[in-house]
Image (cartoon, rainbow, N blue to C red):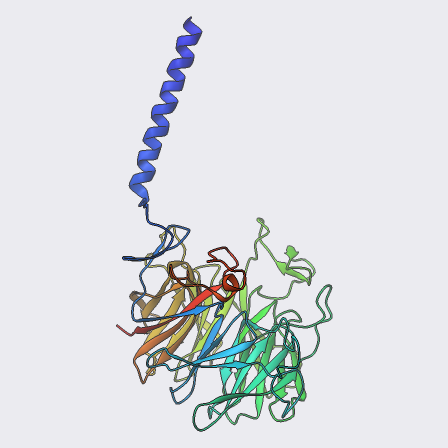
Length: 440
């Protein structure tokens, strides 16, 4: 009998403890009974985040926009993702003006995809990143995951047409013959482009006229973005430096290894610096940054380079002349915040006084007062669900942001679900958006 009473008391105590624990959790986390999707107070996500975008939100059914680019004259905004075409928009209204199919594989003056060719661009789509205008705005270059660069022509009337495809060196790695191009930089005269190859750990220089491979440089592990600053290339590397003989390493897919810590997590990111006047085919300097170094942004005066470190919730600021780190910014509102920010894209304003950072997991753009050595966060601008690319529009005084996630409106049918005769809402109903948010 005593044992039974003891067990009952223990069970009662556990029940009370569990109830108190639940009360504590309820006090810490806002509960909601809202249905997932667009509601009167914003968009409720499946992970209990309320997304309340400011400005114009442009829905992109069937797409997951990985990158965007604004033309040099500010009159044309383009994006792409998951589908074999380029989407053009009016940056003033957000209205879609064109959907341009990718050019077929080939060289200069290749014809556009014919309706008679079945699956001419099967599997072709924008890479993790890699979308850039030429300095004069007459061409658009797009990194295709199938190992080439898609080239589009832009007419005087801002109409876009497919032009050609520039082939890239193969990766020839286990399970991956074609390389995956990522970031693109275009020379000031438009005659050359520089492309990061994510699998082969290289950067290549191509002639924009002939597509000829001119030079190749070895860089760090899994290069992501590339910018041209005078006669130097700065290249961000997801995995940091290439492993040495004594490095602790872990697999990076099936195609190589990366430096890791004791948890088998990639332990660093880096920026490789290439001097275009040097003869060596390897980057001369490697600058350590935070983990998962990804997007790069060059200040308008070209004195500073900002590096987004998605794995560390930080932004590294590098002096382009000395090649030294001058500042590390926290992308969180408070460095002690438990919830991360995952900064993954950056842009400066026209004067270089403001730095805008896409915080993916916060569904917001962080705004910094940029004073190297004394920079500070001013606040957050709410945009769409998981922002991943950004451009500053000086003409409209807006932030153009690509959001890779969204949820279809209640009465809206995405292309995939329409083909299946249903309303959709499953995990493969890809749906993204663009935010055109006024600069506060």
